[in-house]
Image 1 (cartoon, rainbow, N blue to C red):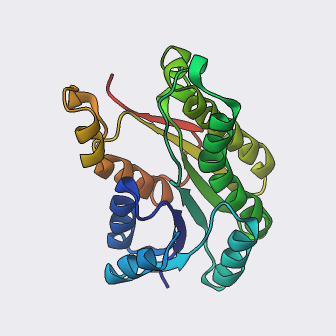
Image 2 (cartoon, rainbow, N blue to C red):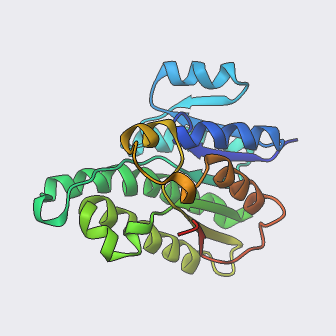
Length: 224
């Protein structure tokens, strides 16, 4: 039977590529989406879709309980959001919104899965961002960078908890992801150092497969 991997953010620009690559590698992808339309789109690609509200713990708990028979042994958590405002023009409400999108959507999955993984082992792959590591970039997108900075600490907490339990977490840090939306938003940008969704997807597949014993907590995928 194919190994099962939970995937959030499955219908986004990156998620569509990741879901396709994991399916091609033979994984059973248990993909969450926020709408029935998204479920239908996933199933047209032969991917098992689930309508889940990642902002709602009860919805997440019901989802996890419904898929334990598939014995998921990994979770790739791509769901999130972005905003550009600098620190001087970022309200706490703006920050809270980014925390909801970038931290809560990951934390509620992690929180529910840890007890399950504690029995059998498991793996988390999270998506960080350079502004979450580099304040010279982060101050220009304060809410986003603060929320993404929390992703790194969440991963560290998972690894501390998982020591001796065969639970581990890795944060991938891409550069600007080369998507149609980003090219449209930044038409004059030099895209030569951007990170392709395919490169991210292949790295995720490697970490889930032959690279599953890799214990680097942060992997950087950018050229600048």
